[in-house]
Image (tube, rainbow, N blue to C red; front, side, top):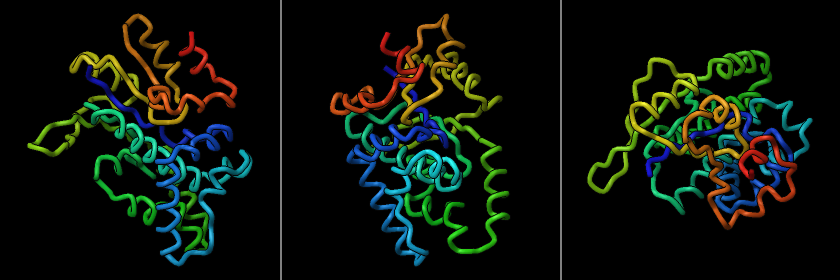
Length: 236
């Protein structure tokens, strides 16, 4: 069955319980440790990425640049986990602006480049934080969703960009359904706005699923987290 993987974006870790559970996933922890090594090698002031991701909401949510980078790191780890148990998805959908997990997973940039070029690094390099914040916030406001289609090339897996007339998420789903008959959509999150998509496409037989819920070894993930409307809907 053809599937599309959707990367949740900057708000993937907006709840403390989700962050704590996310860093318990081995592949996510591996990516965080690698990111920490890259950070330390840049000779920046000391900063602990793991502690930041596990911090309380008022700390995490008030640092939008670090939040963006942390969300991308976690999503790359969750995609590593997904690929360890599933074939490469037929389509990838994600924001290619700011700190982009989908760009890393496509091989358009390296994981090192994600860390080194992140706007989260700039305040540690310079005292001029206002300018970098304005630039970053502008980038966040200009979300740029793109879709990539898998193509086989001998023993390699490559993706090519799909041309879109309208890059909004509803129109992207509509295009994937009409043009490619894609019925299953997997969120690389954790957490998603899939309830809105379910409501929009309620007359069609589409599946909107969490990658975490597709992994029986992660059945503990939601146990300590008060279910959102999305999880409640999925359990019905």
